Every structure is written in structure tokens, then in C-alpha cells.
Image 1 (spheres, one colour):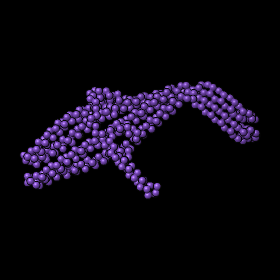
Image 2: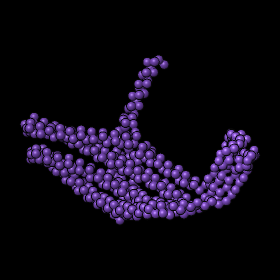
Image 3: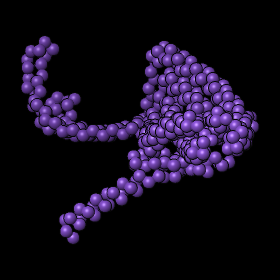
Image 4: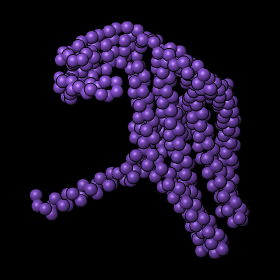
Length: 436
């Protein structure tokens, strides 16, 4: 294959790839959640934090294992000197010049006042906090994406409604031009409708620009190719919505809300810290064993050029007496932190309960608005049809047609917004209960 053909094929492949990337991608909410779980940098950060907490727990459990120390050394010994107490009569002492030392020591703590067990429980609670942080971040990212997605859906539908109204306006203008040729319509009437058409086109441009912004935010968060154009699934408005009572939502929040679980875990963490401070005031008991091999033997004069081996096993007790008067303030501080954590948990319960009640009310209001908007669209369509027929028969003024057209546009846009608002408040309720 010639260089020219290879270059043509390469350009063709690149253009095809660009075309494929630029293709619209219909995406539902569940697929969006899946992509977020796989690609979101924020979720990945919290996942790493959970892995670090796992290692912290393993390190805490490792404190139950014995401490074993091994030391080996070889050294050169110089000759010694011996004096009287007044440093007179110096005498040179010949020394073996090679020295060696081997020591193997082991210690197994059998009682530490509960410090080790408390440290393990604290690490387990920190691991739980990391897991809850990861799950809560996942809920935050999902709700953020739902907001982008529903706004994009709303704007796409607004664009569709505006395009339909532009088509309708074009038809009206065409009819007016035909009537003007017959002498039954004025140029001023056509101008006023053309002005309305330009206003609709400007609104459509604004909607399209807002769609570009939201699409970029979605694509960036999901780490998709920048050229991807996301199209919301048109079946979104038909998703099943749980019709639960307020008390059922409250019960669900009490069981599933991650912030409540975090504050409850915070209480347990501070209780473990109280136990750790108490353990500082208790003795530590450990089994000890050691094996030593030293040479030469320097406690004799002249020095013995021999190796001396000895070993021992026993029980060691360590007690920090100063902790009895140094730890009082730390222990009191730890107890106050427990009380603070308990108060924070109770406050969080109130906040979650208020959030559920407020959004449940908003959800019911959204349902009411939807029913109102559906009736409004029905009436607006009926009014537009009647007014248009009357205008065609010269029984209505142009201003009547304009009013009817604007009312129809407003009703259509209001219905789209009302449907999306119901879905938004439903997903917000799932976010508050952390069941998203």
C-alpha cells in the first residue's frame, strides 16, 4: 500500500472515530449511576480511603502479636587501662580484640488495661466511618448527577416545545400572508407574529446553550469523551414512583440515612477513646523471654576471652504511676467528647426528620402542580383551537390569537416542568433517606 493510501485510510479512520464519539448517546438514570460508580474520581478517592482504613484495622490487630527483637554485633576491642582511685599507678590491661554480641528477646503482652482491644475496636469503627463516607459520597454524586440530568431533560423538552411553537407560528404567518394577498390581513399583523417568532428563536438559542453547559458537566463527571452528547431517556416521566406515606419515609430515613449512622458511630468512637484513656491508668503485664550470647567477659580482670551464654523467662509489670494525676484532664475531655457526640446525633435526628417532612410536603405540592398543569394544558389547547378557528373566520382579533398562543406555550412548558419537579422531589426524597 502506498504512503498516500495509508494517509487517506488514517484520516478516514480518525474522522469515523470523531463521528462515532459525537453521536448522541441515550442514557437512563441507572446507566448514569453505573458509569459514576466506575469512573467518578470522587468515588475513587473515598474507595482508597476505605482501603487505608482496612490496613489500619489490620495494623491494630497486629498489636496482639508478640514483640520480638534480634540484635547481632561484632566489634573491635582496644586495650584497657587500670588506675587507682586517685588515678595513679596506671596499668595496661590486655584485652581480647574481637567482641561479639547476640541477643534474642521476646515479649507478649497479656494485659494492657484493655488498650489493645480498644484500639482494635476503634480501628473497626474508623473502618465503618470510611465505608459510610464512601457510601454517602456515592449518594452525593448520584444526586448531583440527577440534578444535572433532570435539568437537561427539562431543557430538552422546553426546546422541543419551543420548536413546535415556532413551526406553529410559521404556519400562522403563512396563512396571514395568503390572507394579505386576498386583502383580508394587514402587514402589521404579520410583523407582530414575526416578532413573536424571533422571541421564540431567541429562547430556543438560550435553551440550547444551557443544554451544552449541562451536557459538559455530565460528561466531565462521568469521564466520558468530551464530544459525547447525552440524550435523556424519554421514558423517564413514566418511571414508577413509590407512593409512601410521610411516616414510611421517616422510618426509611431512620434505618438508611448515612449521616445518622455516621453520628452514631461517632458516639461509639468517642466511647472507645474513653476506654483508651482509662487503660493508661492501669498496669501492663507481659510474658518476657530472652537469649543472650556475649563475649568477651569483661566483668573479670584480667578479661576472660570466652563467650558467655544466658537466658531467662518471666513476667514483667509496667505501671505508669504519673498517669494517676496526669490523665484526669484527658479522661474528662474524652467523656465530654462522648456527650458532644451524643448531642450531635440527636441534632442530626431532628435535621433529618425536618428534611423528610419538608421534602414530603414539596413532593405533594409537586403532584398538585402537575394535576393543575395538565388541566391548564387541556384548557389552553382548547382555547387556542377555538381562537384560531374564530380568527380564520374573522371573528377574533390578532391580539386574541397572540394571547392564545402565548397561553399554550406557557402551559406546555409548565407541564414539562411540573412532571420533572415530581421526579426531582421523588429522587430528593430517596437522597435524604440515602436509598438513591
